[in-house]
Image (tube, rainbow, N blue to C red; front, side, top):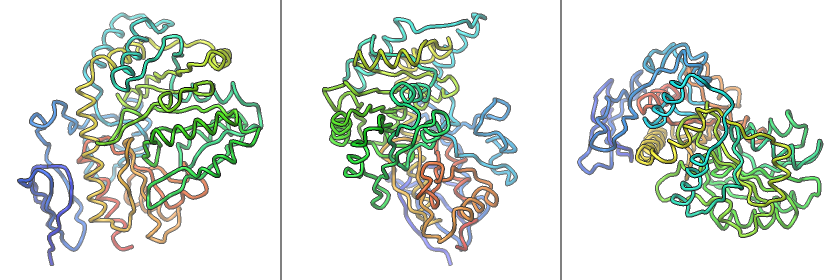
Length: 447
């Protein structure tokens, strides 16, 4: 028997297929779904939306990434344009986008390429000016040129801070669930100890355990705290009050606070990111790491910056970090991104939030046991499969091997408590995302 349900989701033109109807509603806010008893192979195959009436950028266009050295698509067995081929694995595990970069960045890349010489390159007045003006107009934050140290990617700056301010065997504080590469850098590259302060999970909303954080900072050999802000993978955008408390506790215990803010421009409606430098007036222990990699989908260009207002701190960091040389492509990309791409970014935020809303609405209907909370920032969903009563290995097998969907195991980001979780990155054409979710739902429908 067919039942009718209504769920919040972005607007699509309708298409009926295998007993499923997605119908555009007059109120421009809902989709009516008529469900059959089983999940059909092509449950949601959406026609391309003419976004010209909504946004100027067509993010529904599928860009082929096979043969472009994409880590995300290696081993997938095909291209995104063939997403309905059940032999192709659909990848959602890597935090980069299957969405085309803005035209001004593409044009800037062509200008650099056409020059035919790609020698050692350094940041210019135009580069520093673009970054300083971005923070001025977007965050009402005044940076000084001398505070800025260009970096070959955000993790290069984080690594330099670990190396500069700790010794072998010292502790580096992190708050799991958190970006798993932090742990790898701390323990495997620099032979420090990852000191975990577990975030408190309240029905998918994560907050700091302040007593545990204070205790960790009070240990003299715990010398650095790496903060992910906004938080990957749990999607928190820390409030100014939370950030101010982190600053006060770390400063009181002489702990260096390194804030990785590379997801800061990817926010849901109503969320506001506070740069760490706005959370305190005392910057004596603060390092802000920022970059265009996530926001403008140029992770392969590895363009980031460390911002360190304190002269002493900056001097120690520079001594360890050295250079500041960048690729000429990175320099040109940052200038174009921060001066010419505002409209594209506004469209991107709208589209990503639409993907997130569509995914959450679909999961509520087709996989109601999966717990997921809408993030405040990032383009990441942190999926809780614990209600299925399966082991981490069983969850992995059903998703990766049977459904042929590649997410990222929660254990990567939380080795202790992440076994029932999966990380899903949503920035791709919406129809590809929905096909990935449909495959998962079909595999879990009997659990």
